[in-house]
Each structure stands twice: as C-alpha cells, then as structure tokens.
Image (cartoon, rainbow, N blue to C red; front, side, top):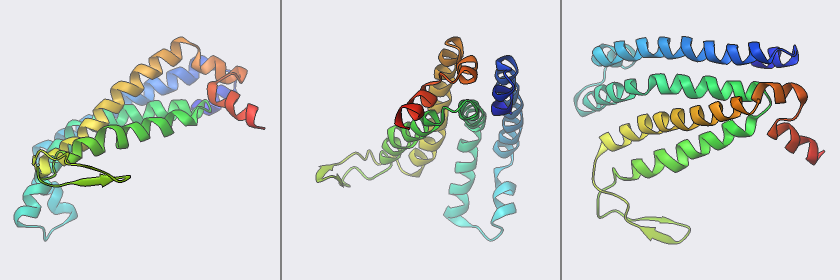
Length: 182
C-alpha cells in the first residue's frame, strides 16, 4: 500500500498507511502475546501435543519470554515495509543484519558454558557466562526490541527528511544508489 500511494503521488497517504499499519499490528500482536503469556502450556500443547519434561518446560518459558517482544516485531515489520514501499530495501537488509548478528548472536553466546571456546576466523574467544537457555530466549526478544527502537528512530529521522516525498521524486537513498549503478 505504501508503494501504491507513492506511485499515486500521495506521500501523506503513504505515511498514514505505515502509521495505521503499525498501530493495528502492535495492538493485534500485543493481544496475541498476552494470551500466549497467560496460557503458554496450552499453546505449546496445541502445536506439539506429545511434548513433556524439560522440553515442555523450556517451551513454556520461551513462549512467555517471546510474548514480551511481539509488539516490537510488529513495529519492525511494518516500518521496514514502509521503507521497502519507498524503494529503500537496503534499510531492511541492514536492520536484519544488525538484529541477528549484532544483537541476537552475541547475547545468545552468553548462554554458552564459561569454559566453552568459540573460534571465528581463527580467533578463539570464550564468550559464555553459563547463563543457560533463558539467555538464548532473551536474545530473541531483546534483539526484536532493540530493532524496534533502532528502526523506529531511523524511521522518524527519515520521515522528517521527507522519506515519502523523496520516494515520489525518485531521490531516496536506495533509488539514487540503484540509478548510479545502471
């Protein structure tokens, strides 16, 4: 819808589409997260009826932790869709790289046992603090929240600088980069 409004020379509607989309999805995913947080056991059983023991306990714990980040997932996905609709697809690429490699993986590494060693490009490091599986679960939620804050701030900056109007004029950063490579 953003791309359609940009193509129709309606930057105001493109911006409103993004804002309304963020509001709707944040509300919907917050409700879904609340249900998941309140009844994680039945949710787990719905998808994996035979799960038991430690696997079930980890699943319930993960579903509860993941529920905190659902509104953040909505923010990131809809704001990145807004950027994509204006032709700024590089923004999604960079945001996802930072989310996964800059936040999620390093935080998840804290779950490793303190004595564990990881070698990357011949450099060995012992990143683990022996925090266990909850660190991995929090890495997922934390990276989603960090991405929402980062992408949200970048989106506000881009809108103030004319994100949607520039897309109509063909002067967006990604459009300029693509044109210079042709």
